[in-house]
Amino acid sequence: MSRGGKRVGAGRKAQGVTRKVSLTLTEVEWAQIKESGLTVAAFLKRLMHGQTEAPAAKPSGYPRRHAEERWQNYLMNNEQQYATEVVEAAQQSFYNILFPQGAETAQVKTKTQYECPFTGKRFGSMDALVKAAIPYLLKSAGHDLRHKRELAYIRERESSPRYIDQL
Image (tube, rainbow, N blue to C red):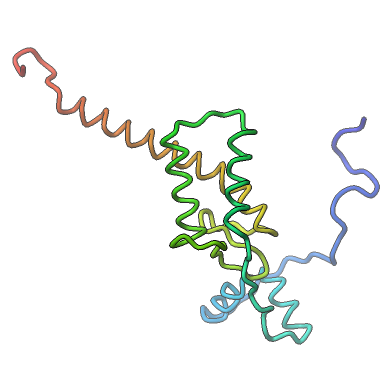
């Protein structure tokens, strides 16, 4: 089995010719591109093809029960064991942000892709977003908990006496 290097037919198919350019625009124009949710290239292509309006944003329509199933599957199939308080903190963040005020459908910004409210990364589907969000939130909650414990330990050491005459 060959490894690495160029192979006939391997890789992504070219979409066109790549040329590096420098583009000078006003802050307002750069803001327009950013607001569109598109890359600079996609924004320019849309303008070149006479499409002045961005495609309408679609509601995500991702039901809470799908997110709950995905969460349980992740915990059951993941080898790493998390402390109960880490799982609870990550879950609370997950549901409060994706399903505010107990909503039954996810509330996520969508443009041409799904924007993760935790990382700002974009995904092609809500399922991919949720799949990536769960380990990120578990790791983040674990880190936050360790950090709080370390700070408490440091404060405790600083307040404890260092010499016998300080007892």
